[in-house]
Image 1 (cartoon, protein in one colour):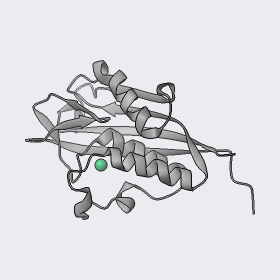
Image 2: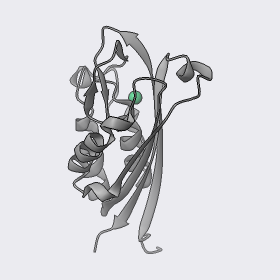
Image 3: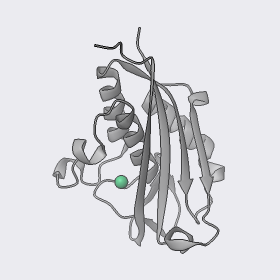
Image 4: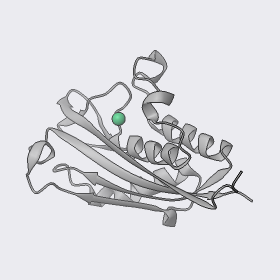
Length: 164
Ligand code: MG
């Protein structure tokens, strides 16, 4: 049997539709916006991508396996729960969170002014310092579904470190 690798990485991607009558929560931070993301949980697309990246780093399936959207327990649930549980799974596999880097793809609202708040919230969830959490945002230059403001997507990469 070969030794466990010192470092592992994982990637995550998610997209949710923007609809009326829902709160918009991104990276655990609420935005004042005319639409929110549709989903079984609070539909925090950024936290979902980060959870998938963490689970991917230890090859432990994805958010859909661990938190099925048919389970009433996760109805309107704060996605922070998924991130914290993903960190627990990473730890159980013998790893600690190294760093996370993520990008939000959204035409509106303006994300940049809220990034410091998101980094703080996400660092708390991950149990790491803020300098290990990179959050970036881009528009789609009005191209495609995201460009037409029909939804918001996020992608994330996580690196985990073998615990001594
Ligand atoms: Mg999702």
